[in-house]
Image (cartoon, rainbow, N blue to C red; front, side, top):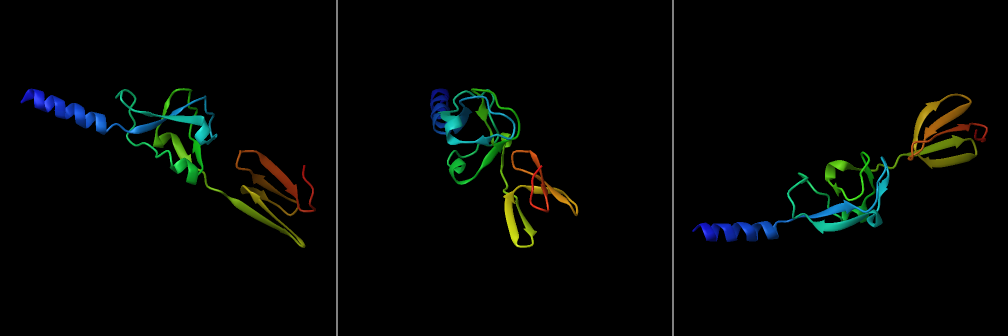
Length: 131
């Protein structure tokens, strides 16, 4: 009876191993995760298991960014990534209308400050020049 239980346990363990993503290189904070940055393995070792894994096919349809620094060779869990939300800002300067990716930080009568998706802050004067 013990041998049958042991064989059944091993068979169940082999078929229930999840496919996990492992980083090929060091991934910086807020870096966009691409399919070329990872490789796939079966998680046979129970050390450093994640509660929830991300489906590798979802990297094709959605844009994910790293929540923190991920070192080379580390398994990537769902909690390590977040979906990137595209923020669009539209400016209307009379005849000129501009649409940019980012979010408004500050708006005055003379200029508008925008935080781009990469974190840089850009200042655009309402007369149309940048500084």
